[in-house]
Figure 1: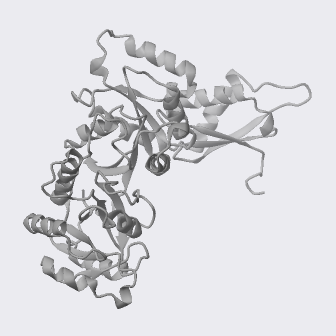
Figure 2: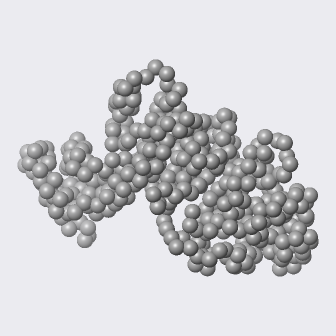
Length: 441
C-alpha cells in the first residue's frame, strides 16, 4: 500500500479502540469494557495536517500467553508490526507501568520501527504527572492523552506525523470499498485471507469470531481494494449480546461505505432468506453486488448444469439477481478465488459507467417503437426524451407528460432494454420518471 501505516499496539483494555475512533473521527471500532473485544487488525483512513495514513487498531497483546485467542491475536499484532511504518504504543496512566507493558516494550524494541509512546486515561491532563513514570519503558517522551475526552490528541498526532516517512507517489490514490458480507460462518474471513495471501484475520470454526468490520488493503492491477470483512449478519431477534448488536450495525454501515458488496453464501446450505435480505439491502442502497458461492469443493454430486439450475431457483425468488454475477469458489483450495478481483473491478466499472444522451434517446426510441407504453382511453402517456443523470449507481431520467402513469411492468421492460444495450452487470440501474421542467421547479 502506498500510504504510510501506523499500528496502535498495547496490552488489553488500555483504550486502543477509543483512540482509534478519536483519530479516525467516528465510532468505527467496537469499544467495550470487556478485554479482548478487538480481535483483528482494523484499518482506517486517517488525516492530520494534510497527511493521510492508514491507522491500524490491533487486539490487546499478551506476550507469552498460552490462551488460544490471545495467541491468535498475537499473530495478528505481528502482522501489523511487520506492515507498520510507525508504532503507537498505548498504555494506561491510571494503572501505571504494568508488567505486560514491559513485555510489550521489549517486543517493540525488536521491531526496528519508530515507536511513539502514549499514556491514556489522563482525564485531568492539565495537572497530570502519571505519564512521567513511563519514561522507564525507554521510548523517550510519553505523550499524555485522554482518548475518551480527546485531550492531548493534537500534540500526539503532531508528533506522529513527524515520524512518518516522506510522502510517496500515489499516496492519495482512492481505493475501491469492498464489503464482504453474509451470514455467520460461511467463510468470509477465509475468503479474504486467501485473497490477501496471509492469515490477515483471525479464523475460527466457531460462528461469530469476527465481531467488528475489519478493513484490509490490497493492491491489484495498480488499483487499491479496501476489503471490509464484516461480522456475520444475524436476524435481529437473535441479537441478544450488545457486541452482536453493534456488529450487526457495523455490517450495515460497511455496506454504506462500500462500492461493491460480495455476498458469501455456503454452497451446501444454499441461499437463505437472510442472504436475500442482505442482497436486497445492498442492491437498494445502490451498491454493486457479487454472489460468491463458497465451499463449492464440498459439493460432490454436481455436473455442468448444477450451478445454472441453482441460479434459476434463486432468480425466481429475487428477479434482480439475474443481473448479478455468481462466482463458485473455495476459500480453502483457492478455486477461482482470484477471479473475484477481476470481477470486482468489472462490476465497479459497470456501476460507474456513463452513456451519452444521444445514445440513451436512440435506445429509448427503439424500445418505444417495439413496444409503446400502455395507454388509458383519453389519457395518452408519452415518453419524450431521456438522459443519464447519475452514476454509482447508473441513473436514467425519462421525461414524460404523465410520469406517474408509467406502469411498473413497462418500467421493467425499459430497464431490461437498457441493460441489453449497455450491460450494467452487477450494478443496480435506476429509472426516474419526471415531467418536463420539473428539475427546474
